[in-house]
Structures are given as structure tokens and as C-alpha cells.
Image (tube, rainbow, N blue to C red):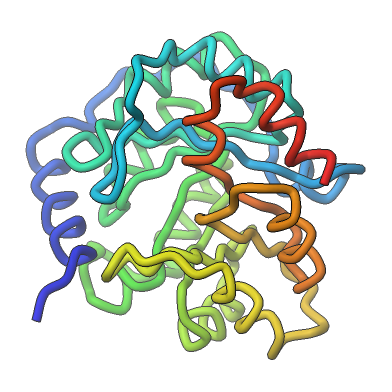
Amino acid sequence: MNDILDTLAKDAKETVESGYYKINPIENHEYSFKKNITESEKAPIITEIKLSSPSKSVSRKINILNTANAMSNGGAIGISILTEPKHFKGSLNHFKIVREKTSIPLLMKDFIVSKTQIETASNLSANAILLIQALFDRNYCDTNREVMIEYAHSKNIEVLLETHTEDEFERALESDADLIGINNRDLRTLKVDLKTTTKILGKYPDLSETIVSESGIEKPADIISLRNSGANAFLVGTAVISASDIKNKVRELVEA
């Protein structure tokens, strides 16, 4: 029985085949999420520019560049930008606008099933991409995980490898990914549970990998709890993008 992740993956393949990802290269900007996370003296917050999702949409118009600047000025160590057009209203042009006008690490967030998308990330001067363990497990990607990660690295792009279950996380630890993500949102059902990160990391008390907890984070107390569980960085989407004062919302989380 298909779930939402199957739909997202199949549509991603169609988007690749449509030629959507063809884009001319722009000037290179070399920044590192891992370095910023490791060197951060405060809570390392990765904010996200996401205008819509299958579960929720932003209810007001947003100036992409002003939003990115507010996130950066609030203390975010990097920004994730959705580029998936069908379900998340993402845009390669949004990414390009932010890349050309800001000096901060940027992650191209998409449902990556093809090397073509990694080539696009390189052309956009993305500093990191998202790969999803479940998409490899379901054989949606045009090559295996190791080849995808190696290809990204050959383009000087860091990899955030996303997991949701203990089994996925255990196998992700065997990869060469720069960052291991734990998504508190189950992409099969879109349900969110912050305990996902806590439960998984509770079984791995002495990790050397850099762990990013993703989704469902709303307030400083969430950051404190997840950090105490062993997470090193925190990807926050809806709580920031929907805030009336984005800069201060980010600052509130950074100071947790």
C-alpha cells in the first residue's frame, strides 16, 4: 500500500524528467554546515524557507530575501530552502536569490532521487543537500546511497542523511554522510513526535557523528530537551517561517 512518501518520490522522478532542474551555474560560495554547528557557542539552529507542505501552508505572502536575512540576523547557522515545486511550492529561483545575496550556508532541500538534482545543487552553489534513507530503501534513487554521497562530496557539497526509525538511523551511521538527521515527522503519515529523536538517541549515548533533529520544534524547551538527548543541531521550519517576527523567533531558539 502506497503512502505519502511514495507519492513524493514518484513525483520527484517526474519533475527530474520534465527538465525542471536545468539551471545555469552561479558564483560559488563555500560555507560549511558541519563547521558552523561544531563551532557554535549557542544552540545551532538551521531555519527553513518552506511556503507549503502536504500538512500546512504559510498563510501570508513572504519576501524570500527579507525572510532569509531575518533568519541570518537572528543567529541561524544555516538555512534550508525547499526546491520541490509540486507539493512544497519550492523554487530553484528562491534558492538562487538567497544564494546570491547572503553569506550563510544553504541546504537545498528536495526529494533527491537522481544525480541530476545534485548537479543542480552544485550549479546553485548549495553547501549541503538532503538525502533520505527511506528513498534508498524503497529503490527510488537512480543509484545507491554511497555513490550519491560520493558524488555530492565530489562537488564540495555536504550531505544531511535523514532517518526516521532506529533501523534507518543505525544504517545511516555506516555512511559517509556529514550530518545524520532524525526527522520527528513520519513522512509516511506526516505525524510529528519529538520523542522520535529522544528514543533513537537514547540507544546511542556515545556518538561522534553530528546529529540534526528535524521537525516539530517550536520553543526553547524543545531545543533544551533534544540537546539533552544528544542532538547537536536543530532544523526548525514552521515555527520560524510562520512567526510574526522571524528574527526574534530565531534568536529565542538560538539562546535556548
